[in-house]
Amino acid sequence: MSEVRRSRRQDYVWFCPITTRWLDNDVYGHVNNVHYYSWIDTAVNAWLIREGGLDPVRDRIVGYCVESGLRYFRPLRYPEEVEVGVRVAHLGRSSVRYELGIFRRGEEEAVAEGHFVHVFVDRTRDRATPIPPTIRAALERLQRAG
Image 1 (cartoon, rainbow, N blue to C red):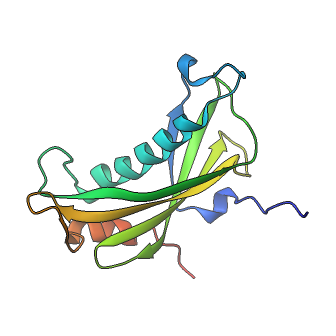
Image 2: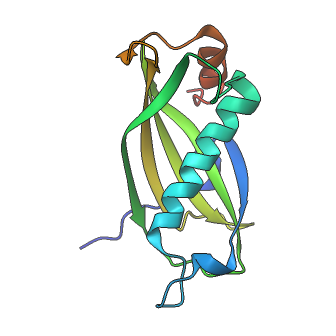
């Protein structure tokens, strides 16, 4: 079986730094998979808050995660520094699919990569709704040109 091509830094538009913590390591001596999901959620929402103006506590329209997945290539261990690369693979009317790469700081190939899908929802009606214009503009900046 041939090895899967791991994504590289140049495949992503923006990076979110993450610091591993002592409690991230599991009994096997490496970062447990659940923490990777936390990192991608942190990276996506950091962008939405910083660049899209999202107020996750007060805004009526918010993104609900409806799908996520990760593939792991190499283990990480505390006390490594990590960077999560983010790009938008598909931008719909009310949903967005992000693709993410998790990198050791300074390394070119991802140690893990995955995807994360948000559907934007009006929380008062609990129904899908169009992505707000400021958030859409921020998401468009995460799309790769060409």
